[in-house]
Amino acid sequence: MFSKACEYGIKATLYIARQSQLEKRASLKEIAGAINSPEAFTAKNLHQLARYGIINSGNSPNGGFYIPTVDQEKGKLSHIVTAIDGSSIYNGCGLGLRECNELQPCPVHDKFKIIRDQLKAMLETTTIHELTTGLKEGLTFLKR
Image (tube, rainbow, N blue to C red; front, top):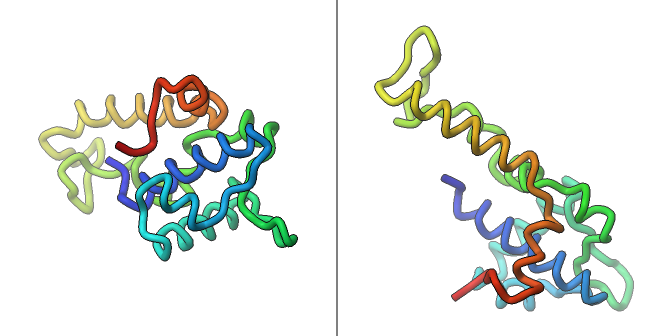
């Protein structure tokens, strides 16, 4: 469903948010290790997330990445997905056809549209802060 870059972007954002809740800033190396992602790939994702204002990077001697609490509460999962993958997830064809619409649907168009709409609603209503709750309580994990 999500690209590998988007999966890593979501995990990195949640890791940074959780560290921020503990009043810590996370380094590139720390984030990459915590989400089991190559450092160069993680750096590219973090740059994209920072450019979209989803995460912040410190330029001081303390440096590191962080997300203020207020931004965690306002930030939606859809913001991360759009920053990394764009909006194609909301209108792409379930079979990958270039042209698929109501007038010329693919065989799964009607059923896939329902799923796509539900996914969009979930992404647009789920906050970064909400997703870190499971991490905080040890109920969810970012790597196995």
